[in-house]
Image 1 (tube, helix red, strand yellow):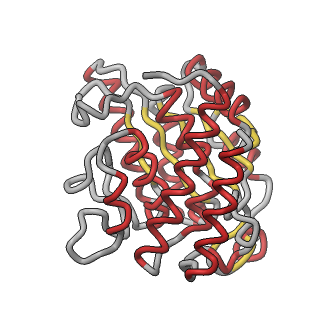
Image 2: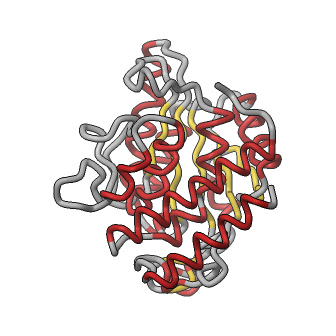
Length: 278
């Protein structure tokens, strides 16, 4: 069921953040920073934009979501649980050796996961294949691919972009989670990344810029992407790593570590307060 109420969508995003913290804290490992930065994007996609049905996870005509930055699986698992693909209690088993919720998304074991990811750069290639297949068989599905800004250091990303443009994949929407931080620090310092918009435009994409935490703006961008014909769309979502948790926001060292008990309690209290103020 499509949710159009903005406050309700904010609540969903907040619940996704709670699930992220729950999963990473329970596992005592994981990647909270980049998971939190894409929570609003995922909430809008799954509850407002995508043609998906949790009761029919393998529907051939469904839209697809590929989380190319697969290390941020807590975000994907949390939104899938919030959507009803599986019980939220399972989030507490994240990364457990006996759990189906592995450290990276597994399309064989996890209901609702459309592509197994984790090797950075490869998810966009898979998305291009899915979008091309949909064009060829007339399924009419849209493919959404979330990539990380550190991930675009990978050459395979740009090879996939060339193919997306060559085959006029206007059913492909790529979202760059542009939080400016990767495991080694600021992306601008690690790889000298600049003029991201110009780079994707030069590869033939229709490029949109958006505040990745503004629900209204995200909806507008995704609707614009649906109306774009002949070329794929790149949405550069300007985000904050660790968004929603005061002591994690904008901190590269929260790329890949779990909160301790005190930090967990503080995070959940902050998210409860946000929920209370919706």
